[in-house]
Amino acid sequence: MKTRSFLHPALALLFASGCLFAQVTALKVGHLVDPETGTSSANQVILIENGKFTSIGPNVAIPSGASVVDLSSYYVSPGLVDAHNHLALTYKEEPEHNSYYLTTVMDSTAIRAIQAVSNGMTMMSAGFTMERDLGNNGNYADTALRVAIEQGWVPGPTIINSGLIIGTFGGQFSPVPEREMLIEPEYLNADTHDEIIKAIRRNILYGAKVIKICVDCKSYGYSVEDMKLFVAEAAKSGLKVAGHVQTKAGAMRAIEAGIWSIEHSIGLDDETHKLMAEKGIWRVGTETPFTSYHTNTPGAKERFDKQTEGMKNAYAHHVKMAFSTDADYYIPGMDRGQVVIDFLKSWQAAQIPNAEILKIMTINGYKVCDMYEKRGPIKAGLPADLIAVKGNPLEDIDTLRDVRFVMKDGTFFKKDGVMVPAQFFHSGPVPPSAWRIH
Ligand SMILES: [Zn+2]
Image (cartoon, rainbow, N blue to C red; front, side):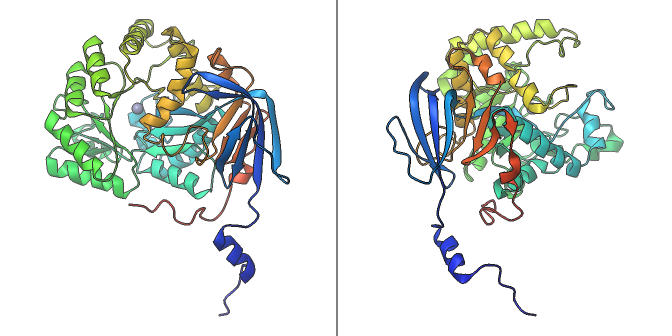
């Protein structure tokens, strides 16, 4: 059979050398927001080439032939981060009465992976260019989502995914003995030290970029020694350990073991906050707002008030805090991105200053994702991700509710308030097999 040539050899050479007329994009920015310092600079020019920022400043010359985009009436900020979500899980009132245990029986991993793509795009539309995805994603639907985005098949945020949640026997589930098999693949049972090592390696092999564990989902949760093993074994592959914590005792053990992040704030108080600040442990609080669509839960207001006090206490103690939602459910009339951005209400209720909220949603997000050096800040040499809004988020954080432009890797995903995903759909690997890095 004759071999078909797809590319003229001269063109192939140019592609290989990476110098095929790289298009420069120039953004004329009205106000460039720096969440790190809480300041903004007027009349900036941003140059982007090969998906990366190359020059940023007030007097940057725009090269001839550059594609110029006028953002002079906008505030441009780095993209937002949700540090705790589950894009391949959507539980709902119908038919499963919001019981995700039932969702895991009714929805296949394949259908959840496709749903995750849709959820990821709505997150991007809401301005979230990075997301930590912490389990409850069937049989590695989260890895499938990450790979699809990294390969350039679909648009979506940069995903830091955990694979299966590793827990002591049963995970967060309480199955009957006849249905023990329902624990996996939602959770990976690991009780002994050998099982813990095997579970971590299994997750890494199947594409995890962070290790998520159930610290105290059962009375026989993980000990300090167990968690030290988690931290050490994950570190061999450069991964951090995020722990679901729901009791103070669990929080104290996780802190002693030196875990990277504590997920949820229910087990945290003044004492744990002080220790977390001392040890630099991330607080990924997942604080649900008090809204018209959440008020039907019994005790919601009391929980919200307690949660608000907890946020104020953590902020006063200078605990490292991350914007995080755990928003893995369907609210009629809202997409995933809209549900997530509405969590601003929790931060506003805790009276965290606007500029601090923006820093928490951006800089702190890149840091808890362990990506700060690689992606996130608007800085020459880093991938070109950014958003543009009409007002100054340093003064009015609610302006983030109407993100008008979203750029990821130098390509606009949203322009003038409308999603424009066409350029993100490739059929082949871009770059070739980049995700196979174990
Ligand atoms: Zn969660």
